[in-house]
Length: 453
Image 1 (cartoon, rainbow, N blue to C red):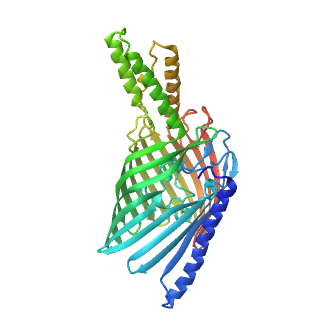
Image 2: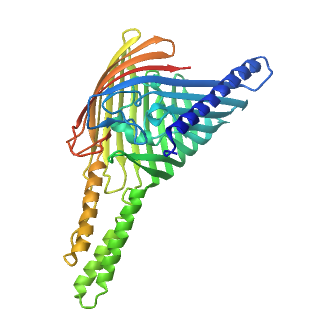
Image 3: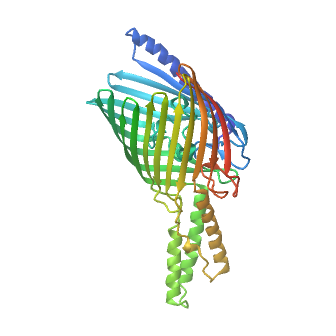
């Protein structure tokens, strides 16, 4: 799909969005007929953001997710935030609802993506079941990350959301149970399923793509909703997170060739037994390095959204354990403080993600001392793995100041200045960095018009 000529991509996007537009017209007519008792109830809604962002860094691009096709390079661009989403709901029976939602982003050439295609069934006693494709439940704001109007800021901080934004949905099922206590409620959710997407490796020029496959996703969330406070905790475990690309195949092929050469050398009867066993152990170590990006991540989030008079505080703590020694664990937080003055709300946001040191064991790539050609191949692979560990480090921190103006009903204008830093010039963080070292400080100025309808 990424290989389509640009003309065909735009045509596909135009036809898809036009089709959703026709559904919109049909839904409006059907809704009018339903009010007169002549049809089934349909409801059309949508959201949109028209945004421009300016990047001052010539060595790094800005992204909202690792599936974004076009980063915001130096200068002005609409690729960061511009998005159009359309949703159709049909309720053929009381308690039964079908939902379809399509989204097109400027950063992906406005190619339409199916975000929701689900059946929601009320089961009674506060229980409801969703089957099909749903929005991602991983973090506090994952389900509304693309809906600019629903976010106080221009966007959830990519510092902690870039990775989970890539997992935009869930194909499977979730079960909700809501219990009301007057003005308060508790919502429990369990979910499971799978998801596929295209992961972009921006550490190459041009950038490369990999097929990402998540299998065995299981998780839960628990939310408490009070009059002026919402608190949510969630945990998701993924049994298999598989990345496949031409480059991964080349790595595996190189490892297989070197492992085979070592095993062949170990068959030489003239070698001492200790050296033979050492070569065999080295070959096994190479086999263990196959598919180095595969992992089994666990995502945990604790978030809150509180209001006190004109003040608002949003906070979230996140933990990501990929159970993969190349990637390393990540611990993050985001904090936003805002104060409303009528329709105008200035805010300040801080976010940080820190990765623990990767511990990938590459001792099997040490020189053998027996064959110069073999040792050259081992050294080449070791350099590749060392570079991969550098680019896998998504540690960063950001400071953002912004202003939101709710100038009309269901419409808001926002301006925001972000300063994003990574730990050093050899750590790309959540930035599109093709060459190391680079200028590890990026300033992004954004202006957006958000609306829902």
